[in-house]
Length: 285
Image (cartoon, rainbow, N blue to C red; front, top):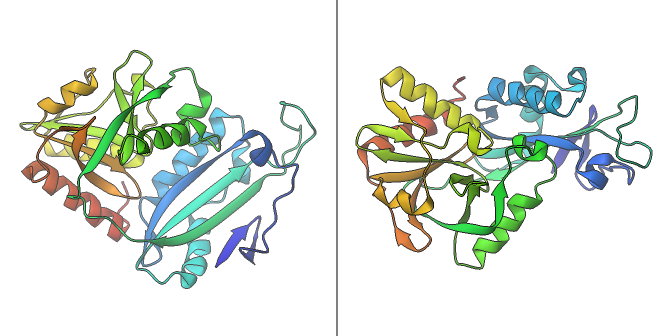
């Protein structure tokens, strides 16, 4: 498999990152994970826009970031090594090397890496089992939690924890104990003809798939509720699902071992199909 790094293509075992790289040493960087279908990246402009937001949050100079057109061209080359129709694309940005210490160097020499790997979509009706993390809470003041930071230890720890409980993914709460998100996705509920999702004040990372769902709801006249919910209240919904720019929408059938929702909910099926169609056709949101 090939990768693209700092302007050149390499065999992945020949690409080298210095031991002084701040992304490796300190987690000083950010990333975007995207889905490509037949070489075309879905929602690419939105991903590149969010990449710029990540950069602004950590005072990274945005002029180093590749354009959407550049990323699309690079991926067209990289996907020739992928034997599946779909691929996962990861664009990783590190601030690069610097002197020892916390402060970034005065002049930036970043490491920018683009990789692709095969991806096989999962049936959106195949229910997820979520378990509430007892270790991790979302912190509204966390810089690392507000972007796709290279420091992903909270998410890793939560996923490791709930795997021990028999869960597929972690349900992570806010500092106040309200439902926030999972380790890799935003969460939604359906009650009649109304959607629910946690407010951004719960310190969630507002994902691109979440934005797609909210935009669709607005255009379709579907009301959205952003009120606070405790984990046990998820059982009151007609359907519960997660939203992620790689996996699309996934039904949730259990939370902490209790049954929730009905995956065959009509509104969920309609919305899941629209999202999957958008992911496959690269429709811009």
